[in-house]
Length: 68
Image (cartoon, rainbow, N blue to C red):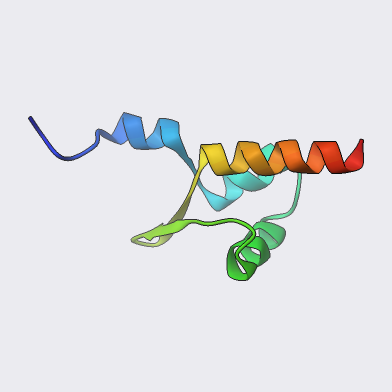
C-alpha cells in the first residue's frame, strides 16, 4: 500500500490561492492576507500554496452567517 496520496485526491481536497479567492468572491491579495494573519491555513508545496477545501467552506459559512 502506498503512503502517497494520488494527485487527484490532493486536487479534490485543496484549493490554490486563486481557487480560494474565486470560491469566496474576494481578491487573491485578500486570501494572502488571511493566510499571513492566520485566518486561513495553507501549506506551501513548491511554489504553490494549497488551502484545505474544508477550511475554505467553513470560512464561507462563517462569512455568510455574519452577513445575513
